[in-house]
Image 1 (cartoon, rainbow, N blue to C red):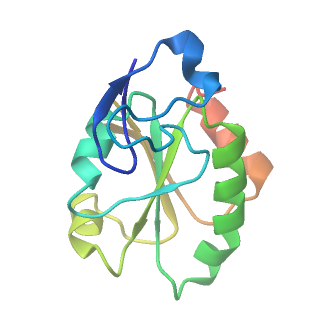
Image 2 (image 1 turned 90 degrees about the horizontal axis):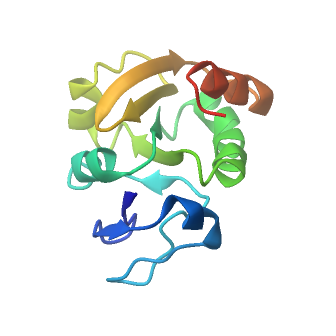
Length: 142
């Protein structure tokens, strides 16, 4: 499997059987699957989404948004629990409005699921850990 490094965006090859072995980037040494959401920007969004290697769940959020603050620790917890099955990323909509506009974000928090660079599902609103995991399972991510 090819995984984009969340730090330098270098593409690394990692055998599927070694995903749970805390693989590191061959270029910069950063953890490839850190178990924490990756902050994406206009400069990094497309390359990371296209070369992530695993499905990517992106949280579109803003600092002033109460429901966004409620889901943030849930998103972090699920990112840690599912680090080898799905990659988690965040886009701050106030800082990166071009990404939000391109993906037609109308309300936040919005969670968009990407596979091989293409959006395959989305949901909006805060949810608890169990609801988020159920939603991911309904998208064939176990």
